[in-house]
Image 1 (cartoon, helix red, strand yellow):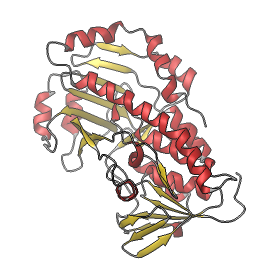
Image 2: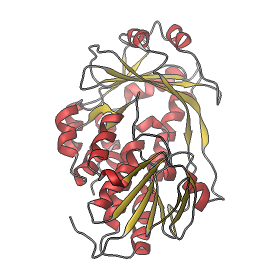
Image 3: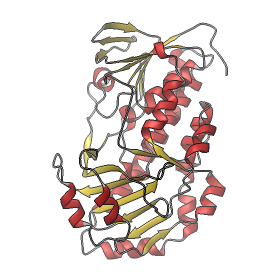
Image 4: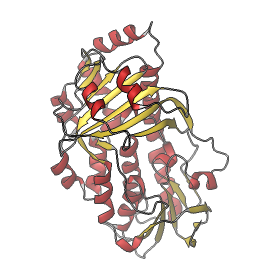
Length: 374
């Protein structure tokens, strides 16, 4: 890979997927890297991750695409079922893979581990909480200050980077539903499937070790977490294997979050600061593109910095990423609205519309999202 003529320094705030990927992409181009993570360790538990073809191409740019593909092939999503099991959308999986490439499902922690081990250990600084960020590249944190030629804000939905540098930006908004995320014991499942009911969606997919990743999106008031026993009762008559998967779920390891989205920012860059991932464009999970877009952000940001000034690189990054990520966020919101805002009277009409949609139309509709190349 091309390297800069001198070692510029980047401080990356946040040690999640977007932050570690940005750090690795810049490190591979000769940048000195400092990754600040407030958690005591660089780790994550309890959730699975679908890496779609566009994100695999981003991982190819980082040199990680081949090992990820080798260990975690899951195939394209099979489609969407109704609660009783009949298909609403049945994907042409062969055509999806032929046109766009492979899909992978793996635990999020596994991808984080691969990113982390590709970085020099001295660049990783866990247990540090950032207090503020200035546009001149100064980062104030619990161990003092760090100065950088580039600051990458990869600190998520409630980003301190965004609040510091974009103080007037509108904060995250609740999307109207909460999301459970579960990894359950090994069980044979047919592949990656999502099921739509009235105000509830359930998805499941096999992980490489035989366990199953499940998610459940439930219309709910903000801040009101339901209980797994209630969820099991509500979905007890849904098609197999959903009741069994929920019976296998462990309440202690189940994750639940209010689902939020970030209103569009007018720019992702300011001074020496760039936002990536959820800090820039947190989106609902309806297209499964949150982590995928963070990976794209990371490699585009690093490439934009090649052989140019930081200001020029940041301007190029913003031009490339803001329109695309905001388009995907809008699409994701529309799917969430279709899934959760149809009452009992309109749900049958929604389902009928989905059944009548040609397979070819669905395949073509994915091109702007997963057809991306670097």
